[in-house]
Length: 139
Image 1 (cartoon, rainbow, N blue to C red):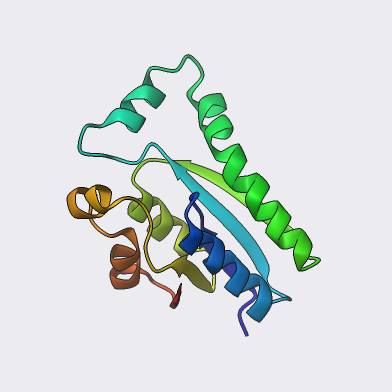
Image 2 (tube, rainbow, N blue to C red):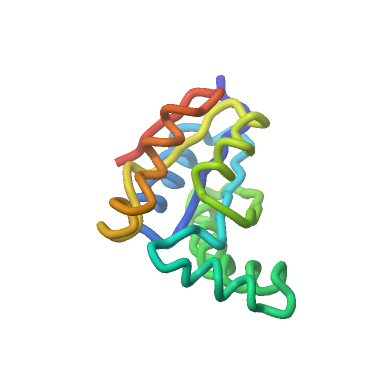
């Protein structure tokens, strides 16, 4: 039985499906939604704009709030509570670092634009290959 599940979330439909899967199939688990801010891009725009903020942590929280609002709304539909966490940096590395503290990771099959996936690489693929715990890929 899985008691601690990590669900990495961005604003994609696949990430929402991953959270729905976790909530539906593991109702007794402690679910943590992780949002990673400052992902690299071909031009470094998001990471650079974040670095230029006066209060980086506050700016990261503002950028994550929409994702967390959606996550909380989904959890409420299942009468569940979730924990939320923000990490700064590269999504795959942040997810893998956090995965050591959970029983499984539930991740969407893909996210981001085609250019992000080609240049940055597929985060899901990196998580599946490098995770120290089982990874469930939701579609």
